Length: 249
Image (cartoon, rainbow, N blue to C red; front, side, top):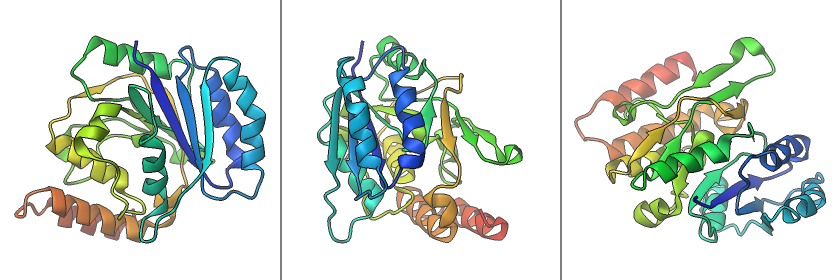
């Protein structure tokens, strides 16, 4: 059975982090290690992590908390992801946001899928997008990579990669403040990474993060990524940018 490294990057996440941590402790299959990279929290996040540390360690989970080592010119989110990924020792890596959470079967379902297909480099499952207004909630279901010129095709919080995929295609591109995950999925697709998609939605993502707050920047980044990774003659990235601009998405 593959071992899992979970990574959570955080900055002043004390209001939501307990739910995230409790969901990991509730897993039927616990991770080998849980790594946190903190961007300089001042709200009690670090104290909360130390409160939870013995609960993880007494169940055999290696628990690491370290300060983010920022580099000039690098976007904060992919920089923090990369910092933890290079130290990960698990066979599989999952990135869990500090305000998102799992149901108890997530890690066992992911590991079963990887165990059944030794060639697969990635496993995705649908993600329930949660909002304080239930009318704005929706289900993000993995789609064919053929749609990449239009949009992100897999929900990143519901996607797990073999550590070897990062060795194959590289880490997250720190030029991108919001859309480094979209760029990474593009590179995986171009490299021929085999993808498995599970049907059951078991991951929950809280809407209202950085991408929603900076839609103009997100549109510019996704357009640039699609142009750099796709065909020069493909007009779909430009059409997608225009539609998002008109719809303010």
